[in-house]
Image (cartoon, rainbow, N blue to C red; front, side, top):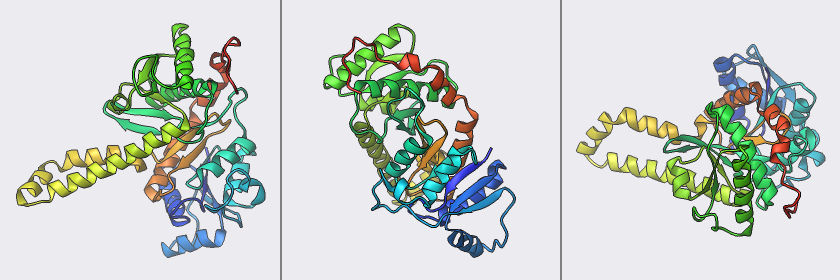
Length: 345
Protein backbone atom coordinates (compact mmCIF):
# COMPACT_ATOMS: atom_id res chain seq x y z
CA UNK A 1 0.00 0.00 0.00
CA UNK A 2 1.01 3.63 -0.47
CA UNK A 3 0.71 6.41 2.11
CA UNK A 4 0.34 10.07 1.14
CA UNK A 5 1.85 12.62 3.56
CA UNK A 6 1.15 16.35 3.59
CA UNK A 7 4.72 17.70 3.79
CA UNK A 8 3.60 21.27 4.53
CA UNK A 9 1.23 20.58 7.44
CA UNK A 10 2.17 21.04 11.10
CA UNK A 11 4.27 23.26 13.31
CA UNK A 12 7.57 21.72 12.17
CA UNK A 13 6.85 21.30 8.47
CA UNK A 14 8.41 20.47 6.13
CA UNK A 15 11.26 18.98 8.18
CA UNK A 16 9.17 16.75 10.46
CA UNK A 17 6.99 15.21 7.71
CA UNK A 18 10.00 14.69 5.42
CA UNK A 19 12.21 13.08 8.06
CA UNK A 20 9.25 11.10 9.37
CA UNK A 21 8.63 9.76 5.88
CA UNK A 22 12.26 8.68 5.64
CA UNK A 23 11.96 6.83 8.95
CA UNK A 24 8.71 5.22 7.86
CA UNK A 25 10.18 3.98 4.58
CA UNK A 26 12.87 2.18 6.56
CA UNK A 27 10.54 0.97 9.31
CA UNK A 28 7.60 -0.30 7.27
CA UNK A 29 9.07 -0.84 3.81
CA UNK A 30 6.00 0.70 2.18
CA UNK A 31 5.96 3.41 -0.54
CA UNK A 32 5.26 6.99 0.52
CA UNK A 33 4.43 10.12 -1.45
CA UNK A 34 5.35 13.49 0.05
CA UNK A 35 3.08 16.28 -1.19
CA UNK A 36 4.26 19.87 -0.98
CA UNK A 37 6.71 22.45 -2.29
CA UNK A 38 9.34 20.28 -3.94
CA UNK A 39 12.18 22.77 -3.49
CA UNK A 40 11.57 22.92 0.27
CA UNK A 41 11.27 19.14 0.55
CA UNK A 42 14.54 18.63 -1.32
CA UNK A 43 16.21 21.30 0.83
CA UNK A 44 15.39 19.23 3.93
CA UNK A 45 16.86 16.14 2.25
CA UNK A 46 19.96 18.09 1.22
CA UNK A 47 20.57 19.16 4.82
CA UNK A 48 20.71 15.45 5.65
CA UNK A 49 23.11 14.88 2.74
CA UNK A 50 20.49 12.95 0.77
CA UNK A 51 20.95 13.76 -2.92
CA UNK A 52 18.63 11.15 -4.41
CA UNK A 53 15.28 9.87 -3.18
CA UNK A 54 15.39 6.57 -1.27
CA UNK A 55 13.55 3.65 -2.83
CA UNK A 56 9.84 3.91 -2.16
CA UNK A 57 9.81 7.66 -1.56
CA UNK A 58 8.47 10.09 -4.15
CA UNK A 59 7.51 13.77 -4.25
CA UNK A 60 4.37 15.38 -5.70
CA UNK A 61 4.82 19.11 -6.10
CA UNK A 62 2.13 21.40 -4.69
CA UNK A 63 2.70 25.15 -4.83
CA UNK A 64 0.35 26.37 -2.07
CA UNK A 65 0.19 25.90 1.70
CA UNK A 66 -2.84 25.94 4.00
CA UNK A 67 -2.14 28.52 6.69
CA UNK A 68 -3.63 28.69 10.18
CA UNK A 69 -5.44 31.91 9.22
CA UNK A 70 -7.21 30.30 6.24
CA UNK A 71 -10.93 29.50 6.45
CA UNK A 72 -10.95 25.74 7.09
CA UNK A 73 -14.34 25.20 5.44
CA UNK A 74 -13.33 26.71 2.09
CA UNK A 75 -9.53 26.56 1.85
CA UNK A 76 -9.55 23.24 0.01
CA UNK A 77 -11.48 25.07 -2.74
CA UNK A 78 -9.64 28.42 -2.72
CA UNK A 79 -6.19 26.81 -2.60
CA UNK A 80 -6.60 24.01 -5.11
CA UNK A 81 -2.86 23.46 -5.39
CA UNK A 82 -2.20 23.26 -1.66
CA UNK A 83 -0.48 20.17 -0.31
CA UNK A 84 -3.68 19.34 1.60
CA UNK A 85 -5.99 19.58 -1.41
CA UNK A 86 -3.60 17.80 -3.78
CA UNK A 87 -3.01 15.01 -1.26
CA UNK A 88 -6.71 14.45 -0.61
CA UNK A 89 -7.42 14.41 -4.35
CA UNK A 90 -4.69 11.81 -4.80
CA UNK A 91 -6.40 9.64 -2.19
CA UNK A 92 -9.75 10.22 -3.87
CA UNK A 93 -8.35 9.20 -7.26
CA UNK A 94 -6.75 6.01 -5.97
CA UNK A 95 -3.14 7.26 -6.12
CA UNK A 96 -2.65 6.21 -2.50
CA UNK A 97 -4.36 4.18 0.20
CA UNK A 98 -4.21 6.58 3.16
CA UNK A 99 -3.55 10.27 3.80
CA UNK A 100 -1.74 11.89 6.74
CA UNK A 101 -1.53 15.57 7.68
CA UNK A 102 -0.48 17.49 10.78
CA UNK A 103 -2.18 20.61 9.48
CA UNK A 104 -5.43 22.34 10.42
CA UNK A 105 -7.97 19.88 11.84
CA UNK A 106 -10.87 21.88 10.46
CA UNK A 107 -9.37 22.05 6.97
CA UNK A 108 -8.56 18.33 6.95
CA UNK A 109 -12.04 17.42 8.14
CA UNK A 110 -13.72 19.77 5.66
CA UNK A 111 -11.58 18.58 2.75
CA UNK A 112 -11.99 14.91 3.61
CA UNK A 113 -15.75 15.29 3.96
CA UNK A 114 -16.23 17.12 0.67
CA UNK A 115 -13.55 15.46 -1.47
CA UNK A 116 -13.33 11.89 -0.13
CA UNK A 117 -16.88 12.09 1.30
CA UNK A 118 -18.52 10.44 4.25
CA UNK A 119 -19.69 6.85 4.25
CA UNK A 120 -23.32 6.96 3.02
CA UNK A 121 -25.63 7.12 6.01
CA UNK A 122 -23.04 8.62 8.39
CA UNK A 123 -24.19 12.07 9.48
CA UNK A 124 -20.84 13.45 10.64
CA UNK A 125 -17.25 12.26 10.59
CA UNK A 126 -15.56 12.19 13.99
CA UNK A 127 -12.06 12.48 15.41
CA UNK A 128 -11.21 9.31 17.35
CA UNK A 129 -7.82 9.34 19.11
CA UNK A 130 -6.44 6.39 21.06
CA UNK A 131 -5.80 7.54 24.64
CA UNK A 132 -3.92 5.78 27.47
CA UNK A 133 -5.92 4.52 30.45
CA UNK A 134 -5.23 2.54 33.59
CA UNK A 135 -6.34 -0.62 31.80
CA UNK A 136 -4.40 -0.02 28.58
CA UNK A 137 -6.01 2.18 25.91
CA UNK A 138 -9.40 3.49 24.85
CA UNK A 139 -10.98 5.22 21.85
CA UNK A 140 -12.26 8.76 22.54
CA UNK A 141 -14.95 9.84 20.07
CA UNK A 142 -15.59 12.68 19.23
CA UNK A 143 -12.48 14.61 20.29
CA UNK A 144 -13.17 17.92 18.60
CA UNK A 145 -14.61 17.65 15.11
CA UNK A 146 -18.22 18.38 16.11
CA UNK A 147 -18.78 20.82 18.97
CA UNK A 148 -22.55 20.74 18.45
CA UNK A 149 -24.07 17.29 18.09
CA UNK A 150 -27.49 15.74 17.82
CA UNK A 151 -28.22 12.49 19.71
CA UNK A 152 -28.11 10.69 16.35
CA UNK A 153 -24.56 11.89 15.68
CA UNK A 154 -23.43 10.66 19.08
CA UNK A 155 -25.15 7.32 18.63
CA UNK A 156 -23.27 6.86 15.37
CA UNK A 157 -20.02 7.88 17.09
CA UNK A 158 -20.60 5.08 19.59
CA UNK A 159 -21.01 2.47 16.86
CA UNK A 160 -18.05 3.71 14.81
CA UNK A 161 -15.90 3.78 17.93
CA UNK A 162 -16.97 0.24 18.77
CA UNK A 163 -16.03 -1.04 15.30
CA UNK A 164 -12.70 0.80 15.54
CA UNK A 165 -11.94 -0.66 18.97
CA UNK A 166 -12.64 -4.16 17.66
CA UNK A 167 -10.05 -3.66 14.95
CA UNK A 168 -7.53 -1.69 16.98
CA UNK A 169 -7.63 -3.68 20.22
CA UNK A 170 -8.72 -7.06 18.83
CA UNK A 171 -11.67 -7.44 21.21
CA UNK A 172 -15.06 -8.86 20.31
CA UNK A 173 -17.42 -6.69 22.34
CA UNK A 174 -15.81 -3.34 23.26
CA UNK A 175 -17.28 -1.67 26.34
CA UNK A 176 -18.89 1.60 25.26
CA UNK A 177 -19.39 4.31 27.87
CA UNK A 178 -21.05 7.73 27.59
CA UNK A 179 -18.89 10.44 29.16
CA UNK A 180 -21.13 12.27 31.62
CA UNK A 181 -21.32 14.11 34.95
CA UNK A 182 -22.61 11.05 36.78
CA UNK A 183 -23.32 7.37 36.28
CA UNK A 184 -27.10 7.44 36.70
CA UNK A 185 -29.22 7.42 33.48
CA UNK A 186 -30.88 10.65 34.65
CA UNK A 187 -27.59 12.59 34.66
CA UNK A 188 -26.63 15.16 32.05
CA UNK A 189 -28.59 17.50 29.81
CA UNK A 190 -31.52 16.43 27.63
CA UNK A 191 -29.22 15.59 24.73
CA UNK A 192 -27.13 13.19 26.81
CA UNK A 193 -30.22 11.64 28.40
CA UNK A 194 -31.59 10.84 24.95
CA UNK A 195 -28.22 9.46 23.78
CA UNK A 196 -28.20 7.21 26.84
CA UNK A 197 -31.69 5.98 25.97
CA UNK A 198 -30.76 5.27 22.34
CA UNK A 199 -27.59 3.40 23.28
CA UNK A 200 -29.34 1.42 26.01
CA UNK A 201 -32.01 0.31 23.53
CA UNK A 202 -29.31 -0.69 21.04
CA UNK A 203 -27.50 -2.59 23.79
CA UNK A 204 -30.67 -4.40 24.87
CA UNK A 205 -31.05 -5.54 21.24
CA UNK A 206 -27.47 -6.84 21.18
CA UNK A 207 -26.24 -4.27 18.67
CA UNK A 208 -23.62 -2.69 20.95
CA UNK A 209 -22.07 -3.33 24.36
CA UNK A 210 -23.17 -0.17 26.17
CA UNK A 211 -22.14 -0.02 29.84
CA UNK A 212 -23.89 3.26 30.67
CA UNK A 213 -22.70 6.67 31.76
CA UNK A 214 -19.04 7.12 32.57
CA UNK A 215 -17.48 9.80 34.75
CA UNK A 216 -14.13 11.28 33.74
CA UNK A 217 -12.24 9.51 36.52
CA UNK A 218 -13.68 6.13 35.48
CA UNK A 219 -12.76 6.80 31.87
CA UNK A 220 -9.13 7.44 32.86
CA UNK A 221 -9.12 4.29 35.00
CA UNK A 222 -10.04 2.26 31.92
CA UNK A 223 -13.58 1.15 32.66
CA UNK A 224 -14.53 1.50 28.98
CA UNK A 225 -12.88 0.69 25.64
CA UNK A 226 -14.83 3.44 23.86
CA UNK A 227 -15.59 6.82 25.42
CA UNK A 228 -18.43 8.65 23.64
CA UNK A 229 -19.14 12.38 23.87
CA UNK A 230 -19.73 15.46 21.75
CA UNK A 231 -16.68 17.17 20.26
CA UNK A 232 -16.71 20.04 22.76
CA UNK A 233 -16.54 17.82 25.86
CA UNK A 234 -14.20 15.39 24.10
CA UNK A 235 -11.65 18.05 23.19
CA UNK A 236 -11.67 19.49 26.72
CA UNK A 237 -11.22 15.96 28.13
CA UNK A 238 -8.38 15.16 25.71
CA UNK A 239 -6.47 18.41 26.27
CA UNK A 240 -6.88 18.07 30.04
CA UNK A 241 -5.54 14.52 29.88
CA UNK A 242 -2.55 15.61 27.79
CA UNK A 243 -1.82 18.54 30.08
CA UNK A 244 -2.10 16.42 33.21
CA UNK A 245 0.26 13.81 31.77
CA UNK A 246 2.82 16.47 30.88
CA UNK A 247 2.51 18.04 34.33
CA UNK A 248 2.95 14.72 36.13
CA UNK A 249 6.01 13.73 34.09
CA UNK A 250 7.56 17.15 34.77
CA UNK A 251 6.89 16.84 38.52
CA UNK A 252 8.26 13.29 38.62
CA UNK A 253 11.45 14.48 36.93
CA UNK A 254 11.83 17.27 39.49
CA UNK A 255 11.17 14.88 42.37
CA UNK A 256 13.69 12.29 41.20
CA UNK A 257 16.47 14.81 40.61
CA UNK A 258 16.23 16.64 43.92
CA UNK A 259 19.32 15.09 45.53
CA UNK A 260 21.68 12.15 45.34
CA UNK A 261 19.25 9.77 47.07
CA UNK A 262 16.39 10.53 44.69
CA UNK A 263 18.77 10.29 41.72
CA UNK A 264 19.72 6.79 42.82
CA UNK A 265 16.03 5.95 43.05
CA UNK A 266 15.53 7.25 39.54
CA UNK A 267 18.41 5.08 38.32
CA UNK A 268 16.82 1.91 39.68
CA UNK A 269 13.37 2.89 38.38
CA UNK A 270 14.63 4.08 34.99
CA UNK A 271 13.11 1.18 33.03
CA UNK A 272 9.68 1.66 34.61
CA UNK A 273 9.79 5.43 34.24
CA UNK A 274 10.67 5.09 30.56
CA UNK A 275 7.75 2.72 30.14
CA UNK A 276 5.41 5.24 31.77
CA UNK A 277 6.78 8.06 29.62
CA UNK A 278 6.27 6.00 26.48
CA UNK A 279 2.69 5.13 27.45
CA UNK A 280 1.84 8.79 28.01
CA UNK A 281 3.63 10.04 24.87
CA UNK A 282 1.14 10.88 22.08
CA UNK A 283 3.96 10.45 19.55
CA UNK A 284 3.70 6.68 20.01
CA UNK A 285 0.24 6.67 18.39
CA UNK A 286 1.18 9.36 15.91
CA UNK A 287 -2.23 10.52 14.83
CA UNK A 288 -5.99 10.40 15.09
CA UNK A 289 -8.25 8.54 12.72
CA UNK A 290 -11.14 10.39 11.10
CA UNK A 291 -13.98 7.89 11.35
CA UNK A 292 -16.88 8.03 8.94
CA UNK A 293 -14.82 8.98 5.87
CA UNK A 294 -14.81 6.53 2.95
CA UNK A 295 -10.99 6.20 2.90
CA UNK A 296 -8.35 6.32 5.66
CA UNK A 297 -7.45 9.86 6.72
CA UNK A 298 -5.16 10.39 9.72
CA UNK A 299 -4.83 13.73 11.53
CA UNK A 300 -1.39 13.96 13.13
CA UNK A 301 -0.81 16.29 16.07
CA UNK A 302 0.14 19.82 15.02
CA UNK A 303 3.38 19.59 16.99
CA UNK A 304 4.36 16.22 15.50
CA UNK A 305 8.06 15.56 15.09
CA UNK A 306 9.58 12.99 12.73
CA UNK A 307 9.00 10.13 15.19
CA UNK A 308 5.30 11.00 15.48
CA UNK A 309 4.90 11.15 11.70
CA UNK A 310 6.54 7.74 11.39
CA UNK A 311 4.12 6.37 14.01
CA UNK A 312 1.22 7.92 12.09
CA UNK A 313 2.29 5.99 8.99
CA UNK A 314 2.10 2.78 11.01
CA UNK A 315 -1.40 3.72 12.12
CA UNK A 316 -2.41 4.56 8.54
CA UNK A 317 -1.18 1.17 7.32
CA UNK A 318 -3.12 -0.62 10.04
CA UNK A 319 -6.25 1.39 9.22
CA UNK A 320 -5.98 0.82 5.47
CA UNK A 321 -5.42 -2.92 5.86
CA UNK A 322 -8.35 -3.34 8.25
CA UNK A 323 -12.00 -3.88 7.38
CA UNK A 324 -13.13 -0.86 9.40
CA UNK A 325 -14.73 1.12 6.58
CA UNK A 326 -16.49 -2.01 5.31
CA UNK A 327 -17.72 -2.84 8.82
CA UNK A 328 -19.28 0.61 9.15
CA UNK A 329 -20.80 0.43 5.68
CA UNK A 330 -22.37 -2.96 6.34
CA UNK A 331 -23.86 -1.88 9.67
CA UNK A 332 -25.41 1.47 8.79
CA UNK A 333 -28.88 0.12 9.56
CA UNK A 334 -27.77 -0.67 13.11
CA UNK A 335 -26.88 2.99 13.60
CA UNK A 336 -30.24 4.34 12.50
CA UNK A 337 -32.31 6.22 15.06
CA UNK A 338 -35.84 4.74 15.30
CA UNK A 339 -38.38 6.82 13.37
CA UNK A 340 -40.47 7.39 16.48
CA UNK A 341 -37.60 9.29 18.11
CA UNK A 342 -37.66 13.05 17.62
CA UNK A 343 -34.07 13.77 16.64
CA UNK A 344 -32.87 16.74 14.64
CA UNK A 345 -30.23 15.78 12.00
